[in-house]
Image (tube, rainbow, N blue to C red):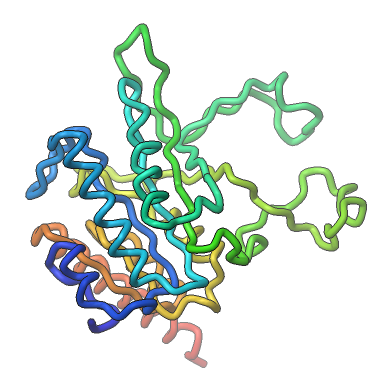
Length: 282
């Protein structure tokens, strides 16, 4: 398999053609089987069929992932069926994966001002992120999804401060054990907003580029020889890799999504060349 290529093929077939242990990081978001209107894929198969398929993906990915590699699996459910991500995670558990971290991708959050404590720079309530109301008297709006961080051993070292955040209370610097600078572990709640788009989204379930970017940095950019996205869609993982200077491989069964991904990659490469020219010009 050639690096920096998106192959139009089923990911199981694609991973079968890859060498064992050749991938250091997998970042992906498979279909959730909730009836999304994909162009090619049928997102309405039975739960049993879906979980068998996820088990096959887990087995194939486990073979190509290096011993010190990470698999960040983004998956969510619905208010009516919140078990989907847990059921899928259990299929990965059956195939030898350790759930090293359970990360919550926060897409929308609301914090009343009285709950924030003494933050002088915040003067009112906060409500940020992508909010899509649902017409239900039984369920709350679903404001998060899971990012399951799987490894083969459960003992993979991360570069946590690569995605660290400054201390709000600066008195903690030097007071907490290991707090030698103004940077702390982000924790397992990641607020990642969607990019704003004015036109119709070309893919019904695309994740923002910020998601694979955080995953790659968390694992450690210097330890990523090759990143795999088995469900590449319109190329968010590839774009993140280009920005971080890392090789990638992706699989996508839908020709139209692949074409959009290739166009986005071409545009990203143009931006990269333009910035390089700007930085080297006298």
